[in-house]
Amino acid sequence: MTVSGKVNEHDWSVSADVQPASGGFVCTIHVDHVDHADPNGKFEHCFKHHRVFGTEREAVLEGLREGMIWIEQKMAHSIHL
Image (cartoon, rainbow, N blue to C red; front, side, top):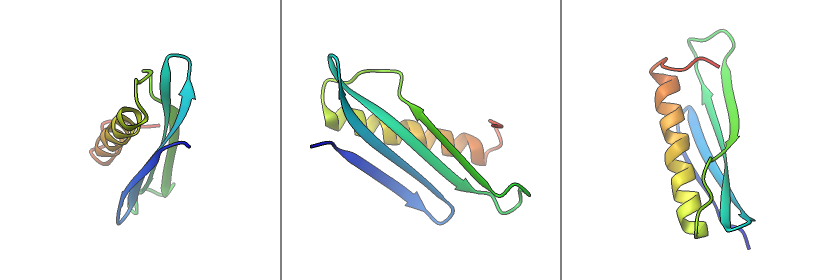
């Protein structure tokens, strides 16, 4: 069984999926943001967390936290991808 989680609000969402890995668990993070002011509209980014975690719970919680940081930076126009 793998653990996953999702957090979303009106125009953004963050999901985190956990997979077993050597030495623990890794997390894949997917972020979506619809920027109505941007002519390109929808921002999507998927990435793996850089750490291996001891438990699935740690991996999914850290993945969601990291994804929410990405959304915060994107909405503040701190990052441009």
